[in-house]
Image 1 (cartoon, one colour):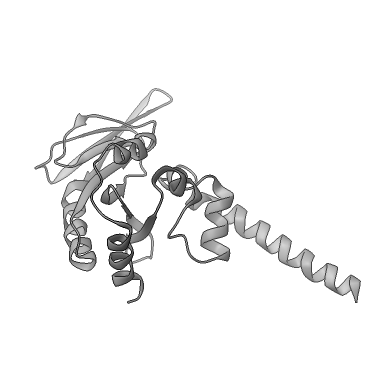
Image 2 (tube, rainbow, N blue to C red):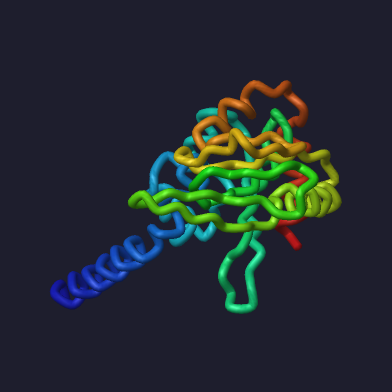
Length: 203
């Protein structure tokens, strides 16, 4: 009986380890690295608890808070845009995770932006939709759902350079987002945050 039990536990552990390794690509080099203390917390909340609406790290930084996740996918099911909505006493912040690295170039009223990358002395340029356009749409959507005013943030990986890009929304490196939010004045109470969060989570 003990051997069967040990074997069963071993299978669960091996399967969990496999899932953790496979899932790491969804965490590495994304804004999720800023939201959680480490990958193990992220994986535990997302995979085991199936509830990543709170974070130990953000609780330490903000106190009461809630997190919402939204993605826009293409016809093949691949995420083309990722949004994180953070609700805390300092406000509600709709964050567009840019994910891509490189040098960004574009203006707030441009239809498209450009990303320049240099690798092994070879330069490549990619055209992407202006992130402000869809961020604005998503902010309006979240404001309607939450019934609270939202602020927009475009978040870039630490290695990205967006000095030649302009937007009507705040543009920040991943590592600067939390400190930026903490500098904002208190705007909503815990009750307002919870009521707004429940409007979406219970649908």
